[in-house]
Amino acid sequence: MIKSKIKQLLIGKQAGTVTLPYPFSPRPSEPGYRGRVVVDTDKCVGCGGCADVCPARCILITDESPFIRIIRRYLDRCIHCGRCEDVCIYDAVHLDGEYELATTDRSDLFIEQVLFMGTCSRCGRCYIPPNPLDRLMVVGFRKDEKWSGQR
Amino acid sequence: MTKEGFIRRFHSKAFGRSLWVFHTNVGACNGCDIEILDVLTPFFDVERFGIKLVGSPRHADVLLVAGPVTVPMMEPLKRLYEAVPSPKLVVAVGACAVGGCVWFDTYNVVGGVDKVIPVDLYIPGCPPKPEAIIYGVALALGLVPKKVGPVRAGHEIPPELEEAVRQMTLARQLSEVAQASDTDPTDGSEQGGLK
Image (tube, rainbow over all chains, first blue to last red; front, side, top):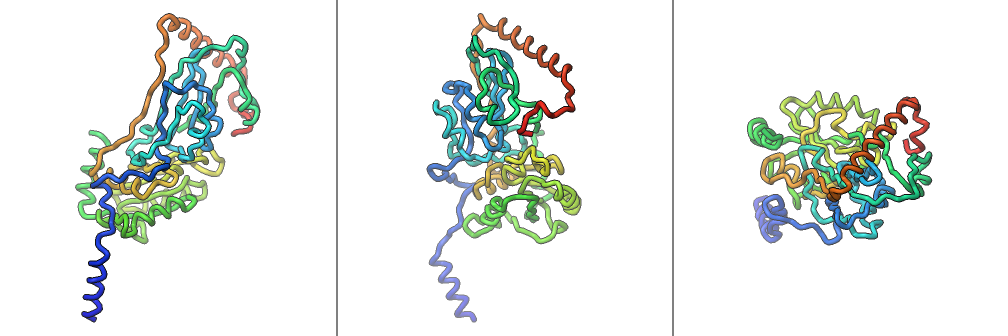
């Protein structure tokens, strides 16, 4: 009995400490990990490609006027799939390795971009096509539905 | 007093020794549950902070919720919240529990735990890394600072166009009001197939 306990102690001594000292010492994430969404407003042209591919539909685009386009990202429901990063040909969206996103307030997970856009002289149209496939093809103003921004 | 400061004081008074956690799943895909299980292994070891899973909500201090709240689970979740003795903390783990994930507007899902019961701590991620859950715990204990905040960025409007932008915005808002008064708001046929 005592012998086996001593043996256990020795084995435990050999293994050493395996527990991470994590909150007291930093632990960087692995390369390629998709964490926090970072948007570079200077590179973004406001094409809205990311909003079309987002599975959680957390990117909402609203045209306030022919000059102003507002992109709102409700990242509380973001699933960090990285499709917005893949689809952006201007490298404006990047998912970095930051994973420490815990918060006490849901509105902390929110990005709002106000983009100054040029105005197209041809397409002054403004309507919501009936199905999502038609919606991908539309030119002109975009206006996300009121229900989709609910929190 | 900030909410973090409140939680820190609340924790030091009410939960001085250890937090006993009741883990519940209200429609999650088990991804978050597996990460929560990971947190309890010797490698991550949250028992350093005195955290322990218990089998009954009546023994628990903390309700750990994973999953978007499906409509059949809404009433059981309310009963579960009432079963936990006060003072209690509610922690939402995963994108589903925080904001509803891809099911935020689905017909049979409430979409977010905070629409049913008050939530004190949100841990986003799909699923969150075990380290992210430990970070959330440490945030509740007041060991680490909060790192995220709302971001508002944008271009500057050229001053010679400011007047034009203001007029255009006004015209657009007026046209929307006119459009809304023309059509019946209860009729959902215009909203398209997404709804």
